[in-house]
Length: 212
Image 1 (spheres, one colour):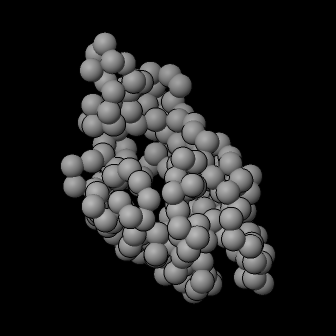
Image 2 (cartoon, rainbow, N blue to C red):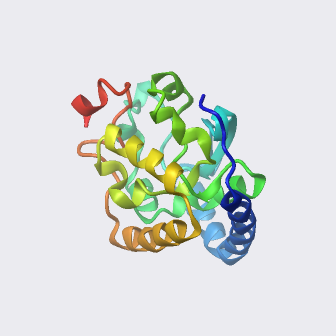
């Protein structure tokens, strides 16, 4: 893992993250309650999805989101993401309401509101040294790659954009990303890659373009 460099803006960013996440958690609490009830009715309990993801410096943490898929059950042919996701789950993802509990990760310091998306732990060994630089900052709920195509762009391009964010992070860039995030969510753009619920599996920089 590359060396973690702290910039003056990073301290300001952390303070803004705590303030913003606290305000948003309170403001969205009625919506989150309604979504939790809808998830319980549609998919059952638990209503939250939890998965270990790598954060800043590759340190793992438990990501929390609202569930959007049924539990895997080979006997009912519920194995792949495409088989497990429901119409309700697709709607939940397309509006990004499933991300609201992730604000708790921001408050805990696992994540930032803006930054490279936290991917799977299994991907850590597949990154090139340059791609691994995406972990020099806290992962984000939204990021530059998400407003540049979200899951509709290839892995090499997505990871290149993540590193671009690391090198150019600033208050102005974060404000721009947040504005573009609102527009992308309203338009429901780039939610999934062609033929997939979310994105193709990242198999390393050599194979990513073939899968994109």
